[in-house]
Image (tube, rainbow, N blue to C red; front, side, top):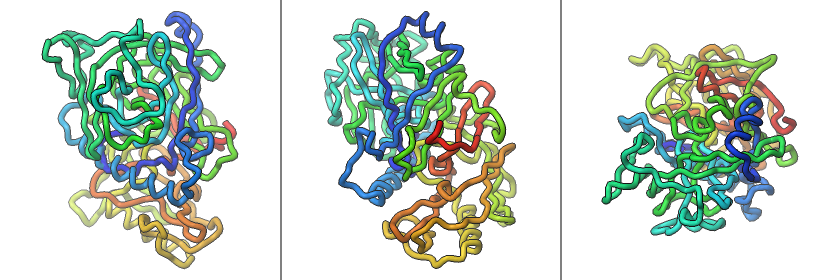
Length: 443
């Protein structure tokens, strides 16, 4: 959940419901390092989600998601402006929840799964200032495996870390553009996750933030954050041989409440292979948390829209000009390029236009039914991704179907609506993001 104005998607938010028990470190590596493991991601607004509010309409949930997305985009911009490339802690606003356990004995926790941040953190006792959460707070004093990290260690080298007044313990502190924040002790403890085969695995000495002072845009369903970004403190990196620097997910469409849950895969289970796979290079940029790729353009029918603007001083495509983010609902595009896409769709789709009843999106068509859209292809460097209607349009009322994109002045973001019904894989060792069209509800 990086610092940016983000169109966060509670809308395609998911909850990884995971049951946890322990294996020894040796058993974990022996049994799981070859095959990896898979967990469930459950749509945040589905009846299976602990955050489900039956009183809200689909349109209300959509508007809430879009508003959170703008907050997220602001956090991305703040994060990019910092000079340090080190990991960050970010409030994801509720996209995905991972159910895990922490400590010995195990204490259940729900963390927002966030590809835009790295550190894992949870609220801890004694809580000086905390948001209300449904689960009990973690008490480090009752865990036999808990250890505070000392100042004079290499682990105390993440962004925004400092030493306590006694120069003994490592402190962390992070604030965000939307007013969210977390402060506490940088620590280690055992975190327990479940694998797809029913095995449950424990990971000792995982670095996490034990937050004693936290607040912001949290609704109580979560206990903190689980970072899935590219930095060294993220869960992906700390899984080591289990993940091998690889993870993937397959997001079920927003309105598909009948299908199985979405999937989050690590290690060998995260390989995206077979017919139809396309891959684009991950671009190394600062901060290393974010997953930067290069967008060359988008084709609407036979018309190819180039990403650069030939009438401006920028007459070339910059490497790493868009972030792939599972936590942002809409696709965010630079103003000039967004205008090209909007105009091309207006010219190609011969339906009456209407205003968005929610007052958020600015290109909507008056229709109760699905529509025949022209072939739309997203051109990444080395990879062409063909969109379907659910990737480019979203229904905001019974009669309005709207473009699921918004213009921004700076950083472009490839949101989660654009990724539904694709198996999306990240290989941090080979530096690739791969896409394969799939029926995510049947995987």
